[in-house]
Length: 324
Image 1 (cartoon, rainbow, N blue to C red):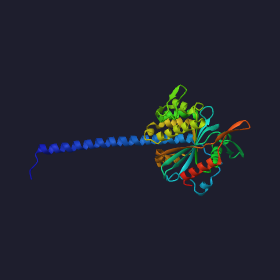
Image 2: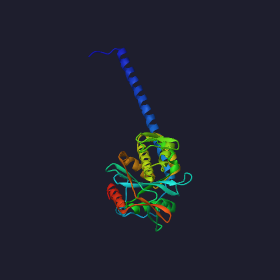
Image 3: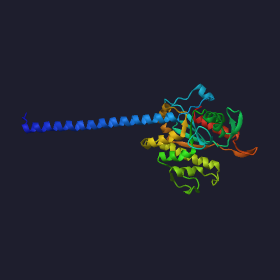
């Protein structure tokens, strides 16, 4: 075995020292990044909980659907299909506690099939307003009895459980679209609204103000309110996909700031966590439906009357999606 010279030993010693220094530097930066990530995670968690506390508004005195009596929905494991009633409230200012729900969509989410559906309910639908014992336009239910009465009336009409609700002021829709970085839609027809031009079949990126113009137009649409409801579903679908993306996490403060001011829901903070963690896959496949009827006048008031066979068709479809 050959003996090492002093210079060789010193060289190896220096290499070991340099190696330790590099290792310590790497470990130091890993520690900084980990600590920083922990702080960011804590900050996100704190902001989320604060905002969701502001948004929370329970739906009291509900009429429980028979399916939920047998098996209450549990989103903790990410296995149960569930429903959310989305309502756009027509009133002044940011408040969504009172007012008519001029936009009503029932969203069903099934994690087992990884599919989401969005059903539009015409605002003039003539049906029983549960809790008042009368028939009226379904969008009046929220004005009469807030979210609980609206949920019970939709539940009664479609014979499926309505588990959650989300109500938002429609004028704040543009801030929400801006918060997720805008969305892209393909207009089903060409039209101009509020100086914005939309071209049939041409993918169009919408910022908030333009998105609001896109869903406000109704009189120029040959499909009338049904055409408007289709465009509303496009906006909701685009927003859902954006919120489910990783990119939205980077802009969470803006999103939370908008939602906190203009949204109410009966989802708790922990339930929102479960939905975001366990159900994001279902946002990849979104299907749209329309509850359709015919307009008629009753005592000088316009109503949308939905045929029994149309209601039965939609009920069957929803029950299949909800595994009922």
